[in-house]
Each structure stands twice: as C-alpha cells, then as structure tokens.
Amino acid sequence: MRYSIITINYNNRDGLIKTIKSVVSQSYKNFEYIVIDGGSTDGSREVIEEYADRISYWISEPDKGIYNAMNKGILQAHGDYLNFMNSGDYFFDESVLANTLPYLTADIVYGRLFYRNHQERSVYLKGSPNMLQFYENTLNHQSSFFARRLFEDTLYDENYKIVSDWKFYIEKLILQNCSFVSMPVKVGFFEGEGISDTHGELDAAERRDVLEKMFPPRVLEAFERFKGKESPMLDLIPQFNRTVRLQNLIIATTKLILKIYHVFHKS
Image (cartoon, rainbow, N blue to C red):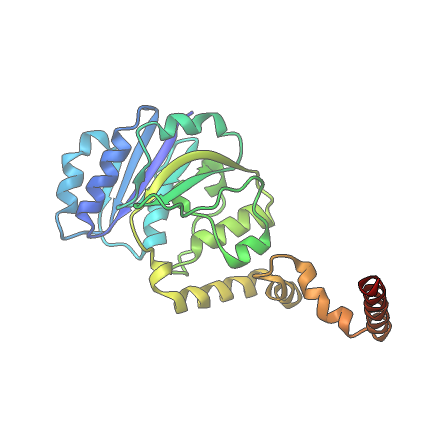
C-alpha cells in the first residue's frame, strides 16, 4: 500500500521545516511526498530545495488559494491513499503511517488529531458521521486518509476559500455513501488556528451557500431545528404542550400524585 503525503505552504518556513521532518522520518517508507509552495518569499523554497532528495515532487509558484494548491498536489499523486499534512502540522510520531496501514479498508479512514498542547481536536467516531454532525461540525483533513479514487471525478471546489474540504466530505460520505472507518490511531498535531477559525463570518456564509445548493429548504429546516440538541425528543415537548387532552391528562395525573403524597405523608 502506497501513500501520497501532500503538504501545501505559503510563507511559513519554520512550520514547513517541522512538517517535512515529521514526514521524512516515518518508519514506513512506501510513500511519495508532494510539496506545493505558493511562491513563498520567506526562505521556504530554500528549505524545499534542501530536502529535495526526500521529496517526490515539488513546485513553488503563485496559486489561487488553499484548495487550488491542494488540487495541484492531488493531480500529482499516484499513491493508494492521500493525506494532507500542511505546513505547520505534523505527524504524531514516526510510526503513524505504519500504524494506519491495517485500517486502510475504506474510502475515508479517519484518525485522531491534537493541538500542540495535546488537547484533542478531532472527535473519535465509533461509526460513520451523519449529516446532522456535518451540519454543525466537520472532519479534519490532517487526520484523514482518502482513497485516491475519490478524486478521480471530484477535486476540491475552488469557488470557496474555507469550506471546500467540508463540502467534499458531505459529497462523498452523505450523498455518495462512501465507506468510512474511524481508527484509534493518533495521526498528528494541528499547529494553530485554521482560516475557518479566524474568518467566522466568511465560514458561515460559505457553509450556508453550500447547504442551499446541495439540499432543499425542508431538509435544512429539519437540521436547523435539531442542531445543538442532546436529543431530538427535546424538541417535541412544546408540541405535546399544545395538545389539550395531554395537558388535561398531565394536570389530572399531577393532582392524583399530590393526593397520594398527602395520604402517605399524613400516615
């Protein structure tokens, strides 16, 4: 089984060094390493050239954003599974690729991701994520391993600046019902805030645009209604309260309970 590890970078020399070192130090060596640099001017190119003998393909030229750079990497990938470990992010240890190997049985294989302080960023899922989970959250591409065939008919949508990886997950796991495996392997560390964390309004606007194009209004109304609830049953309580018969039953039952309480309390 061969991996394609893809790193995109723009003017993040120190982060790039950390990422490259974590990739080339993997104990499992059957992988190609692809680095896509956006024409950095901070010495990143020189770092790439220093490690050129450990990199299968690299390019340093202006791009049209994160997803354009990721798509460039995808088009150069020949491995069975792709992982995006972008500059500043890095593998948990040198055995990640080896530990992941037994789980590569699905279209998307998902592991655990941590912040630098070892606080977990990704949620370990026992089953496959559902649309309600995607409505409120997303998966992390750093801890995902994608079967290359998933990109044969779909690349990341470059019309969006922030949410194209989220859109890709919905297309593949929800609409196309691709297979999914959640594994306990600790995959990597997330260096810091992503663009979606620092551009909340744009993130929300792009998500809304994606949802409105992919789902009819009645579906979105249902997701909006149940989001954030511990149980959908909580939403039914106001509906019960509108039923006169049920209200009368509740009142009568309460009065009976009070009578029983007073009888036993007096005795």
